[in-house]
Image 1 (cartoon, helix red, strand yellow):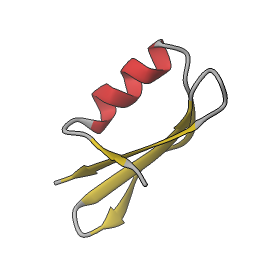
Image 2: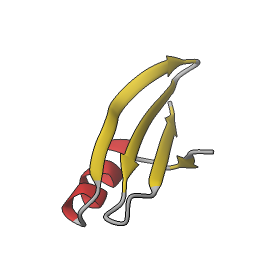
Image 3: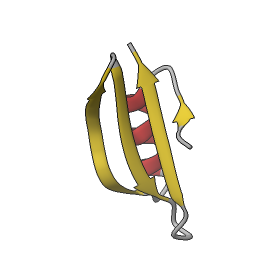
Length: 52
């Protein structure tokens, strides 16, 4: 289940700066929702979602 955030781009950028890797960059999936998937430095998957 993705973590809902107010600003997906800023959250993604902060995670990347902390060592995460983007797996799937911000992608609109309909209904005003955008998602992204990253892996943290330990290899755990992190899902992000932002609603318009």
